[in-house]
Length: 114
Image (cartoon, rainbow, N blue to C red):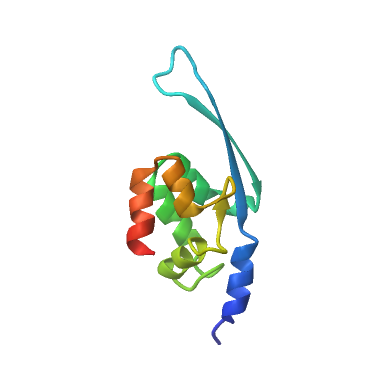
């Protein structure tokens, strides 16, 4: 039996994940440390983390982990989390958040496949 689309749409509507990022500079570190706090549906925080770190591997892993939970395939999960009613990070859609964070690799992946 196929899941009802409205159930999937409702499931994605509640996937609001907020990533609050604060940077602190360590004098001995080459890169700034990131203090990240996820609130909301933290089981989907991997999507926001992928954008924050501009890491396509983390994004693909998050897509894979959510097959069966919010979509029947990775492509369907991607379509659901990038939809207008889909997942948000820091109040922005996943694609918009990747633009704001200058996560070019993740943004390219999201836009080329959605």
